[in-house]
Image (cartoon, rainbow over all chains, first blue to last red; front, side, top):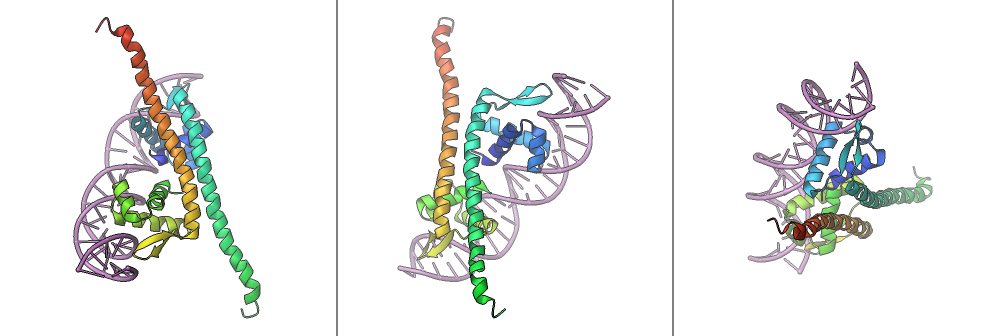
Length: 104
Length: 104
DNA sequence: TCGGGTTACGCTTGCCGTAAGTATC
DNA sequence: GATACTTACGGCAAGCGTAACCCGA
């Protein structure tokens, strides 16, 4: 499974259109379209369909969006852990500083 | 977060060494090492440490491995959904076949 | 006619493999 | 000396951006 492409799809599903997704991700629209097409081909599952002048999720796309949401929620937990880890290391310095203060 | 690198790390954590991970992933050892180094640099978190003639997880690495396990469990759910989706489409043919049988 | 999505195409970046190096048993 | 991981380096595929095109309101 290509999780990079899934992330793009997840962003589209969250925002509702490709344009806003491209703005959020700082990636051009065509790049995103290509990734989605590639993902659909890889999975043999249609995820998006044209809707008016924009796009909409297919039924399978809706389910996939739910699963993707779950996955990237876990990713966010990991990001948070990493951030807390950095903060913890900073806290060590916060703890050291008072001790070191006299000398420098 | 680079989920590709995280996948490699997860495989290392599961197998306990880089060699078996490289065999499972069909990727060379050096390629994996490079990805892990890059990931550690990206996160500013040490994940692996030398241990004897192999490697071991750091404390942060252990926690990260747990989180990664959670994430890739969700990925497996997605894979399963995709498989079931294909199976469902096959089942449609299974359902059509008896009807069509007379004609071909 | 305009907003949004897709196709075409050239370029850059990132990932990988091979070969050589380092360390532990 | 053998096993396991790391560093160095060149090649190739994947991903991106720009430009042009298509379609529905």
